[in-house]
Each structure stands twice: as C-alpha cells, then as structure tokens.
Image (cartoon, rainbow, N blue to C red; front, side, top):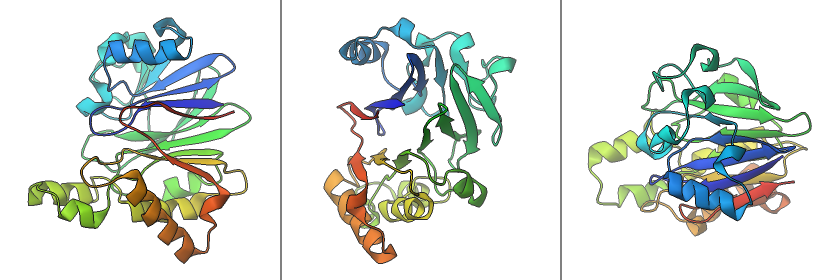
Length: 248
C-alpha cells in the first residue's frame, strides 16, 4: 500500500491511497486544477481515481468535491445529501470498495456524520483520522497495530492560547468536538502502535498554533514519558503545500 498526502490543514485536505493499481481519494478539499497537477506528478490522471471517501462536510475537505460524480462518492448521509444509497457509509461497518477493505469509524467533530477510516489491502492496514476532539474507546481498540497512521496533531495548547483568535474559537478547537492537540495525539498513538507499525504522519497541523518542530518536540516528550522509542518509527508531518508520501 502507498499513500500520498497532497495537502493537509485548514486550507485544504486530500490524500490518495494506492494498492495494486487501484486508487482511493480521501477528501477533496483542494481545487480540481491542484489535484490534476498533483496526479500528473505521479504519472496519473483524474481517470485513475475510482472512488472518493469523504470524512465530513467542512469546506477544507469538500470544496472540490464536484470534480467527481455521485457514483464515485462514499460518505455518510449526514455529510453529503447527494450520496447514493449504495454508497452510504455507516460508522462501525465494513465495506469492500475497489480492492480495499474499508472500516468506518466515527470521529468527534462539529460536523454531523464525521468519520475516519481503517483501510486494508490484504497485506497492510492504514488508519486515517483527522478533525476530531478525541478518539472513542471502541475506536482505539479498532485502530491498534496498523502499519501506517495518518493522524491529527493540530495544535500546541500554549501556542493556540497565545494566538489572536477569539476565545470562543479557541474553546471550540480545544473542545471535545474540535481538534486534538499534539500531546493528545501522541498519547493516543502510544496506546495503539504495535509491532507492525512502520510510519506515522502528523496531519492537519495548524499554521498559527503549531509547527513541525513544535509537534515533534511535544511528541518526543510524550513518547519519553510513556517509555516509547520515538526514533523506532518513521514519523513525519504532512504539509499544506507539499505532497508527503509513504508506504511501500
């Protein structure tokens, strides 16, 4: 399995998953032109993408969704009213989409029907969870020992508090229906990583209230406190501009 995180952050999100020449796109929060250019860099075209999984209906995840037709879109009914009945995703259910086994997990965000995904291709497992205030206990059990994690690490609490954002917005971000902090994210990862885990990508970093350097610093402190070797894993940060790829 391979993955290509085209963009990740509040300005736009889109990730391509590939296995055996089959493709799934997670979210389409970038323009059609950007997507075409990103695909071109990989020697692909729009026709290469068979299906699109949508996490939730905030604009940074669906602004370019009209690039695709309804037959290609899989999500919850609360996320997208135009989703076809046969393409409706229900949390905790499992679906065969293309060559992938896709398990749908609920997330805790201020968007109705928001979800994340556990994607398997028969050999490897990838967990994709962003835009959530916390992880449900049942989901924690489901996402253990994956090969790859693309996992939200949105903000450093101190940096967020010191931004010029309104108090209401700060509370929303730090709340149960907002976004996970670096420390929260790192603690969850320490709970779920296993012998199979190879790569972890920190996703949806805030440009105002976080940085790759800050995120790594916060994660290293948590890993040290938990007695986990930070250097045992290929840990990177996704970008709002540059494609970050991984897998084999």
